[in-house]
Amino acid sequence: MGVHASFETPSARAPQDDEEDGLQTPFVMVRSEAPAERLEPRTGGTLPCVAIRSRLPRMQRVLKSSLVHIAFGFLLMGGWALFANRAHGLGAAWLPALAQGTLSGVLTGGLKKTLEALDGRLGGALAYIIPPAVTAGSILVLLVLVHLLIGTPELLATIAFPWSVSTLYAIIYNAGLVRARRSAA
View (cartoon, one colour):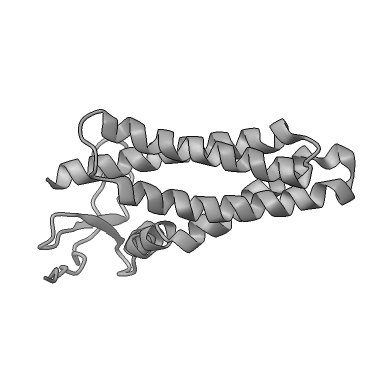
């Protein structure tokens, strides 16, 4: 199934004066067979926003990538753990940072996959509540256990932000999955 669109070239007519302020309008509307309209400058080139819009599908694919989610989780939460334990020196802060970064990377990937696996198994309001609750509880237990085992000096400060963000992420991502599935049905 392909999409076919043919675009007309910009009009060769002279720029029109804007009726309200007397300024010349430098753009013309270009219609296509597709329902969307876009603006092109009279010089025939495309606007930067059109170029960006043409890259959106690729950007959306990248943003949905598990690898991107994992790398972002590693960097953000590992950095947070380093910050949370900074008062104890780098010697005491690097292990919690490495552990939290690794845990967050792995857990982000696992969280995303778990929510996708649970999608469609529950109906009604439970579809919005149970999957994030299951992942939030599991992640909290795992974070507490790992940081207790490695002796993280600032346990609560280290896990509060990553757990809160992962729980919020789970709620938002799960709601998006549920809405997408329901709108497709």
